[in-house]
Image (tube, rainbow, N blue to C red; front, side, top):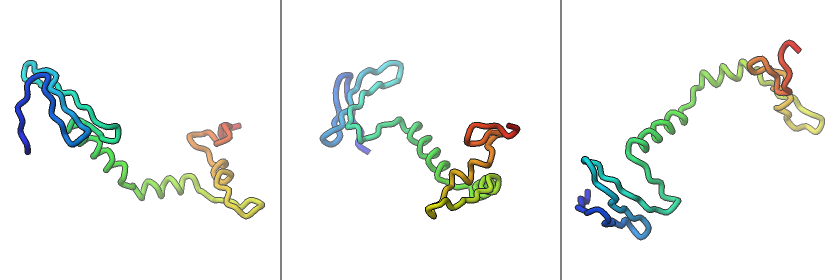
Length: 108
């Protein structure tokens, strides 16, 4: 780890395109300004860790829940006149929260 001492207004450069400017120091808190290209993400460490955790959770597939959802919807595709699968017509007859895809309710 490189450790640098800087005064307010001084700048640190990282590579050719990132600059870190010391903006202020007050009551033990240092404010820094970071200029970086749009393709470089800049996060506080605790925010970055949360993003990583959320991405890991989103990537985990709950196979049991997926199977239950498929069984609930009872997806049965039908073949239309030109031999292609028409999944929309297969699921449009299945209500979701009491409403069909065409906007009608179960008791209509």
